[in-house]
Image 1 (spheres, rainbow, N blue to C red):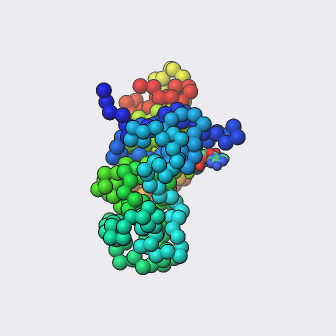
Image 2 (tube, rainbow, N blue to C red; image 1 turned 45 degrees about the vertical axis):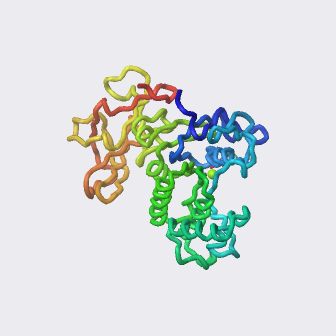
Image 3 (spheres, helix red, strand yellow; image 1 turned 60 degrees about the horizontal axis):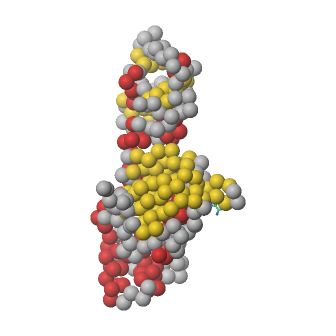
Length: 338
Ligand code: ADP
Ligand code: MG
């Protein structure tokens, strides 16, 4: 018999006045895992996280944490910490006071508070900023205070809802690495909500991709990229997204399928030798390569990556080919075959 997972959501549904929030959410999370809830805005990520936190109660289903049924437990009884997009810092309190606030409320002795705070500030790189007020910090520093406050709580489960979305791109990268390192060093379990696939794919051991309140796929970043469960996942994951084409348009396929193809598997060939005949719609220089967007009658969203800087005028004719082994196959309902 295998041990029960650390967190288990089973058959969770949440509706507001009959309107769908989330439906049929079943998810197991191993202890020490970094799990990302990913999907477009409004797909139910925050609702799922809030249900796990105890900030909402489900209409259906059960939630277990560490072997205990917490489905109807108060948030304060669930032994977890949370970090939100809005840092939720007290503006009139200093960094130090913000970080130890929870410990003070719980009447943790002063010496212990000081020791824990020093450690949390060191881990988050905030040592020396104890006396500052939130208004005197950068966005990245404020988010670190929120992280320090979550760390100091000493909980083994930490829930984060888009904690980096208020930061600029460069800072986001840096704090992303900090969070990942913290999670590993502390050995805590993190459930992390984001609409940013790069964040999810780079940080998580397990990605849960959602759409319209339902889970579309649960898997490793490799699973989602290389074995998308359906056409929604295929188009959501990857930049550029996977191109999709009806099989009837491609020689050699007689079943009625949708075929998926990634840019890295498309090759430009001399005119007349391609499987698809296209024109250039745009060219985007990415640094080490150029992403060429292609228009063609048979496929939508087709593109090809060429090494280095390639100047390709819009409208230029391009023939491309690809190998059958690199095609993804989806049935008429969009579900992956094989
Ligand atoms: P996400 O975090 O993925 O952007 P949410 O979980 O916030 O999405 O929302 C999922 C759906 O539930 C949305 O349609 C949203 O409008 C709805 N919803 C969320 N919270 C409430 C609420 N308190 N009352 C009514 N509808 C809500
Ligand atoms: Mg949200």
